[in-house]
Image 1: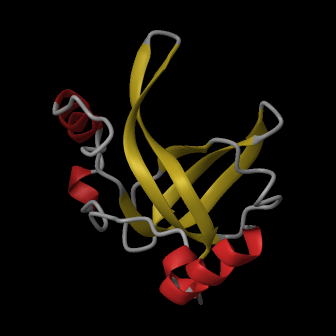
Image 2: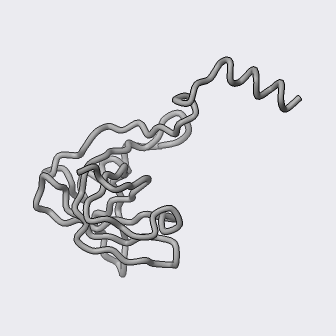
Length: 133
């Protein structure tokens, strides 16, 4: 059965059909990279299957990075075309990216981070990779 199933699948799918694809709404303009925008997106829900929270992508310079909780990256990044530094987190990313390059291309969501009673903007990286030079 497995061999026959594999043959039928290969007739109908190509390698591109099996690649993971992240659909992005593009980069967020630097002027909109703020807590108000993150709050507006959060409040614009409900988000769920078939109507997912917006995801964006851009290129960033990595200002600093450190491992938290043994498997997550906590970063400070700056959009390549910008001046603003922004906190970011990449959950469960250390295993597939043991070191963070100086420049990355990332797919992210705007997030509200609450720490010690203070709200701030945080980018929640869904995927990151070394940026092409």
